[in-house]
Length: 239
Image (cartoon, rainbow, N blue to C red; front, side):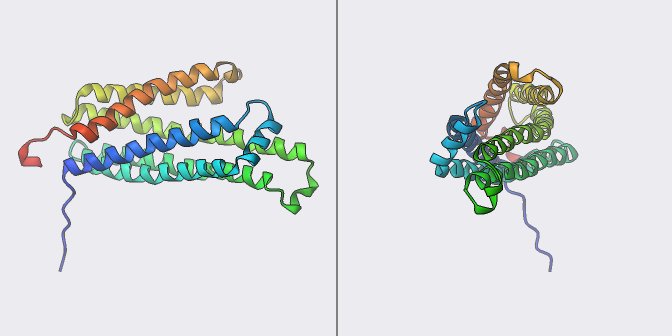
């Protein structure tokens, strides 16, 4: 006997995607901007190491926040796939693929933060290194985490581009949401490629942070709130 399971309703999928997106935004801001940005002292490996050692629990909590964000990413990818599949199955699958690759890349990238903890734990086998060398290596892995984050955002940028196109075409949402997501996609891609291509990227890092954060925050928060509050515009026959 074959048991057929019906897809969740579009309204339910919208709520699932919106809830997951809200968790992603809150967990991401909490982990990266509230905790880690206050522990890392740019250009000072010793001060950064002392901060992390003194507040190791917070540093570990930031990693847990990232894990919550990644689990929510998987949920959102699946919900958006089923929600936008009627618009284009292939493009919805492509958008989900890009988002899941981003999650996988960022999940592996979290190992850089684990390596930081390992270097600062004071294990006896690390006695071959001087203290300053351990601090410098910890800073190297923190820098590697930044680069890994931007690699993941290349895939997330393509996800936002495809998602924006689907949202624009769907008729489920105001078209401005699709345009905003498209702008966010460009911002993510410009910033990531600038980090890898510009020799003097550090001099403009603050500017690029604004270029990425503002359009991304506006687009993704607007989309999240619309999913949660308004849901999708569908005919009764498709509900």
